Length: 396
Image 1 (tube, one colour):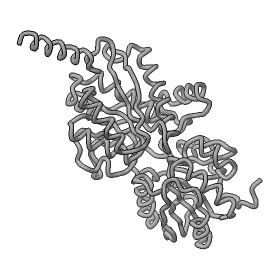
Image 2: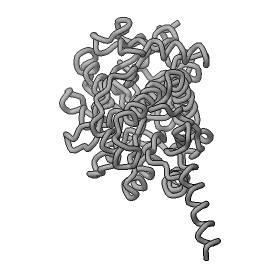
Image 3: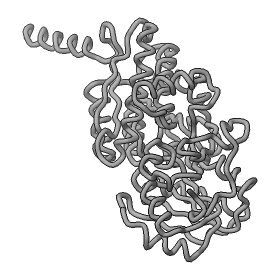
Image 4: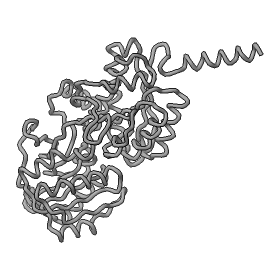
């Protein structure tokens, strides 16, 4: 019996020392992200940004004398895989804080596990409104909700474009659906009639039948919510069909990353999109992060990267302030967050039916001469907007 007791004591001590929180010199943090599969481009941007932030934090001494030991697990963008990863992180690795994911579907799966196991979860780039509308006590979201993603674009449409009609196209995902619903709700107050609202399947490649219906309706504005490949293909095929509108606009995501300009090429010109961050913003550290990312990876990061970068600083700040590194200690510190970051201010609030939500300012960007420029609101503009937009036949 003494041998059995000794064995259990050794195993307990080994588990204690191997704990990510109680390791001698590191706080181990494993982040689930889509590193392969359809949303891998977004996962790649976020992974690179997490790494830059952790490198900086560790160079300054880490957190309470411990370095952050960062690693990743590939969720492939599938909710069941994301769920399985997080169950393992919480149940086996005893990780007291979950950070990450990208798609709203994966984030919702992770959120349900985190809440069930009373483990704080910091959502970084998933926008479906529902995530922070469930009265969860352990789920915190740093990025804006989908209902407000288009605020700057709506302001631009209302004050500059003044459309009478609008067509809404959206991807059949949680993000696409909630983004389309939000724009439909906003269209009435701005005086625009929704003449078409149609979804398309994720992974679709032929949009010409759908775009032909749009062309026949002749809307003033064509607003699309889509991820990377679909955003590019829609604009290229709209150009081929010569569908002229007063404005093409995107609901962030695939319209707000460098790959959109690379993939859609000249068909991307003059497209306006919602975004949550640009390299031109005056937030402290924003320019340094953007320049460092570009120097390492060749392009400026999208808002997804900026949010991931800031999330590591929110994590470090939380761990520094937490009374202990238990799940509840970290949760209480997260709730008290009030931090200025390169992504913007981060403060988790309960209002408008949301819980633990950071209400982040949104922006409108426009592709001008093959580059993203901040055009709205005017207080953040890097260049004046181009409007009216020339017809396809008048473009060079």
